[in-house]
Amino acid sequence: MSYFRATDPFPLESAEHTKLHEFYARLAAGRLATTRCAACKRLAWPPRAFCGECASDRFDWVDLSGEGTIHAFTIQEVGLPSGFAGPRVFAIVKIDGLRVFSILVDAEPAKVAIGQAVRLSPLRVADDPSGNARWLPAFRPA
Amino acid sequence: MRKVALVGAGVSKFGVRKASYRDLIWEAGKACFDAVPAVKPKDVEGLVVGSVMPERTAFQSHISSMAAEALGIRPSALSARTEHMCASGTVGIRYAYAFIAAGLADLVMVLGVEKLNQPSGDEAILNMGTGVDREWEASFGLTAPPCFALAAQRHIAEYGTTEEQLAMVGVKNHTHASKNPNAHFQRGATLEQVLGSRMISSPLRLFMCSPITDGAAAVLVASEERARALTDTPVWIRGTGQALDGFQLTSLHENYAHWPALSRAAQAAYGMAGVRPQDVDVAEVHDCFAIAELIAYEELGFCEKGEAGAFVAAGRSDYGGDVVVNSRGGLMGCGHPLGATGVAQAAEVFAQLRGEAGARQVDDAAIGLTHNNSGMGEHVVMIYGRESR
Image (tube, one colour):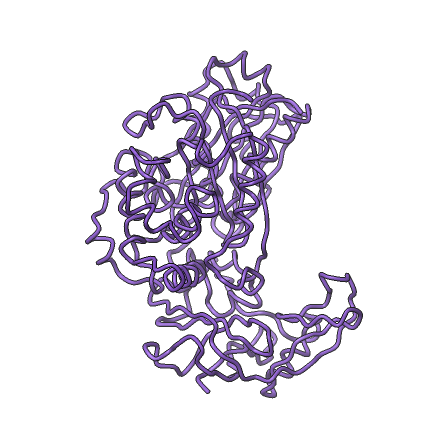
């Protein structure tokens, strides 16, 4: 038997794998969504199927604007995990009062700045083991 | 609650080791048993093993039983593994403390072990991503360095902390490590070397970061009665605290230079121990990155918020200063074999408070502190004393 490596860094996004499938379905359509607790109306990021405030498991999907500003960022040059290349811009993006962790794509690292306007740029990553497309909520300069 | 003390400690050589996961367990166990000749493996009633990712590195789970068998321990009171990312070792010590304080055990070994540099180098870094949120963070390639870089940037922006001050933490800890034969790095480092090392994640350079290291450490924890029977110089667990701000980056304090959970964990430990920050003689703090040590000075109360850069620059966290921080060389100098780190910190405080730290000895050290964190949002603090309260 040859050396077998099982390292899938991406989430399983399909409906049979996660209660949050709707997030990924909307993301594939270019929309950024999250959950609002149906009981206490708390807006969450990231989306969640259980409310840590009121313990309800009922929630509604709401679309966010998809446009925000950079709250904080760092540029990693080296030491990234296998399959990820530097320089990579990691950022906290403020959208509709929420803080969203993501990466900035198609950005000149030296020109990234706090307060910079960015917009959603869904990033297609490796298909899941069943061949379904997968997407991550990345951002690009607006 | 009963009084609880450390009665023995042992540490393996840390580094990129030509040794298996089990070899490391044997080395730390041997060193710990050698330190307490009156205790044989059959005398130990419990074992807690702090270990984060043997499933991915050694392809092994069922860790506590595996380690117990390797060391000849037959647990009758407690057998458990603690997985709490970088703080796993100290969390294990808390378990042993609680069991003994409650009267459920009299003599427990806490062993921390990690074999990170296998099966391959690129997998080692990928594996570190298991410590952040898989779905919302690690899927973007996030590991620890960018998280702490965000804190460093915030501290620089808010308090004027400089890259030189960050580098001074690296110089201090690498210099301390040069006196520790078990450290990963023993060559020391100059300010020029630290500032000239390659950029990892802005503003953190290589010598401001802890490396990926293999290693193990063990301590023996005992009830008062058993401790006094085994040694004239037990080191007492005086206080402990643990607190959580959050797991995901976006759940933490909006300003990453503020770590309220560390302050809360410290206040709990100080209160329980009946000591103040200025009473601490020697502190092992979690310098996974230089900024972490600076923020720890502030949240632990060694200096005011925002003054940590000046504190290290003035030598106040070095020999001859207010408190000697990371006398063994810290995570930067010793390396950071996740589960082993917290136990190795305890082993250093044990040696310091018994006056057995050799070239690293802090004069007349009576109160020691360890701080272990799991990311920026969760912190564990222990306070040890030469005298019981």
